[in-house]
Length: 256
Image (cartoon, rainbow, N blue to C red):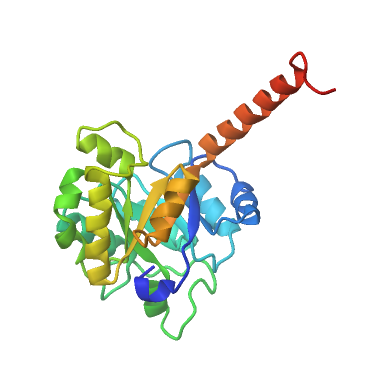
């Protein structure tokens, strides 16, 4: 997802941490543009993630997977199953960004092995060139060290996007682990990363659990896309709201 390819769109994704095949369909029906299958946290394993990817349309542009490490073996399986982007967490150096690109991109940009196990996954006369255009290498910056080394990370050839983890970033600055910072070092980091990514034609995304906060970042042009919410958190919110509405309706004096 290079900035030149994004146009005026501001995709909205969500994090999925449970092995549900139906959840991406429900989210898309509700208006989400895509999903981050989260293999770093939660209950989602490699086999289930590959199955979910294969059940998704081949041309789902924002079907991403976040891996737990830079091990190229699971990255390769996720890509061959149809992942259109791989997010690698806690990138703090140029070497780690290079390793990410090497795992995600075909030669000459990287070292991904050619294994077209899903038919018509990429459109184009050259399968490898089409694959490199279709698949995004996404470095997650979520520490103070990563922010300090933003220029060397973001300038890595073949890197498509930066994904900001604001809660972990806040902790690295000695702050509480929340994400909706309107001022202070986390907000300053967002602005700094916006400046560097813009200079290199790389997109910038962020996780947020607060719709109003995410909308403000998008309106200000500080980010290109957001991941809005985590499946279990969204379900918990729905459960809490439903029980609260029932209790309110059953309380003395409520309308019959």
